[in-house]
Image (cartoon, rainbow, N blue to C red; front, side, top):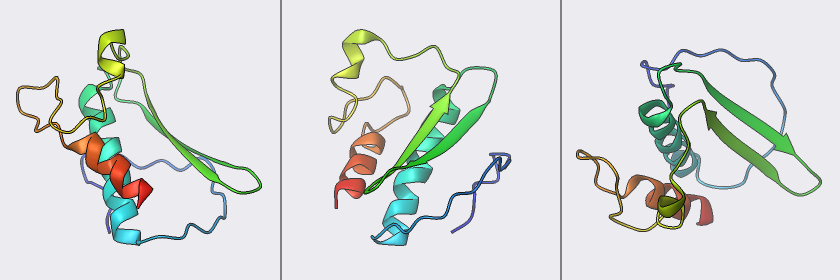
Length: 102
């Protein structure tokens, strides 16, 4: 598993936590969400990945500086084959969510 070369890496802080699951599937889900943020994140190109820990869960947020998601689109984002892109399949976020649920 390697970080995509199109993305600069800058680590601000590292937290230790154990995540149970298939590392390849979890990596695929994260990579898909990050690539989506790069694609739709606006011209600033700044992406933040934030890990928050509580007593039971690790929460991973991928944040970009894009224009946001239109209100009418939010409810459809994770539906299979839904896309707002001419070149997308509409499976990326759906698959990422399913991999995280597995």
